[in-house]
Every structure is written in structure tokens, then in C-alpha cells.
Image 1 (cartoon, rainbow, N blue to C red):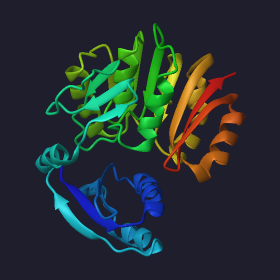
Image 2 (cartoon, rainbow, N blue to C red):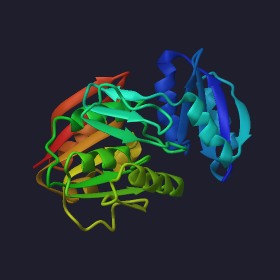
Image 3 (cartoon, rainbow, N blue to C red):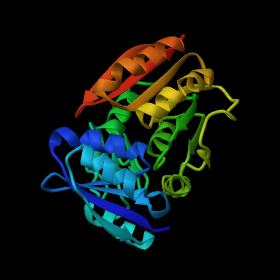
Length: 273
């Protein structure tokens, strides 16, 4: 499947907002380049030129557009993907990088391709920080919008008994399966789905690093599949969306325990009551 890459020059103040808005429009891969250049990728069949023109004009920007063949994506990542270390807790690298020295508590090998979630972005980084403070041993975990599978794999490495994961995107599901195999995390189960409506199991921890609109739409379902006193970790939230997210959480008997902020993005730990 080919992708369309649009290249924009933005400011530090607008870059994160652009990523959030473009994510909601179907863009599923982002690459930051020197000089405040942002490259955003979307499946060719999902690209809406009129909508993209309207969106970028609203930001006072123009963009260039390029058609990218699927086979070109690995080369892009191999040239730009750098290892990530979250404290000494979790290290994320590609197979072509040398192991971390000294080794962190957990090391995850990722072949990201077009999927979101490598640890570089503030949203993923902050969820991993919150996961460090949770006891996953023997717990049932659900990862909603798994992307590369990085959070599901980390939960398994931290001792979770059951880890289930879904994503709306076929590419992400295939990528997650590959990453599961590369990390010897075969008990992690992943499948394609666009909602939580069919989920009937109960979980001790639910992970959701997606975006504001999806979090708001499925807040009730995320609470439904959580056991009492279960933990919900949310990310993909811009600072200005904090009030809306917390109000939706309150309506669904979810209480904020901890919140992290990084680069104007929030990650929240909520408890089910």
C-alpha cells in the first residue's frame, strides 16, 4: 500500500498541535526533521487533498506532497530512528542498533514501519514513565490502539498474565505481531478492531495512547472493561483538552491519581471507582 507524505515547515508552538490534528484526519506516521520540518504520512486511499488544503491554510501553511511506496518506509526509519531510553527503566531500539550499555531494566526491539509509538513522542514516553510505577505481575492488561505494540510488550515484560491489544489499522496489527515475535512476547494477543464494543473480558489495566476524540468517545467502554480499582492510563492529550478528558472521566467514575506533562502533552493515571 502506497502512502502520501506531506512536508510542512512549522514552529515549535504549532508542531504538536499539527500532529494531533493530522492524526485525527488519518495521518498515522510522523517524522521530525531539522529546521522545524514535519513530514506526515497517510495511506494514499485515505488522503483528502481538499481537506488537507483547508487544514494547512487554517494554520497559515503550505505543504509539498510526495507519493511513497511501501517498500521505501523501512529505509526512512533506518536512517532516522534513534534509540530511546526512559530513565534506566525501559530502552527502545531497532534491531540494527547495538544493545544499551548498561542495560536498562527492560529492553524492547521495535521495527516501527508506519505505526505510531516508538517512545520518541512525548505521549508514548510519558505512558512508559507511568507504567514504571505500576505492578503488572499477574495482571490482565488491554492496550487500546496499540500502534507498534510497544506498551503491550512492555506490560508483558513487566509480568502481566494476559495482554490483549487492538488497533484499527491493518498495518499496525501486522507490525505489532512482528514486534511481539522479535521480543519473545508471544502470549500477547493482537487483532484488528475499531471499537471496544465486542470486548467482554475484564482487565486490571487499560492502556490508551490515542487522541482526544477517541478517548472521549470510548471513555465509558474503557471503564466498563476495567475491574473496580483498576488502572486506566491515558495519553495523546493536549494540555488544552485536560478539562474535557477529566470531565468525561468523572462521569464514568474514574478518578485522577497522577498526571505527567511533557511538551504540552498530558498522560494520566486514573483509578476505576
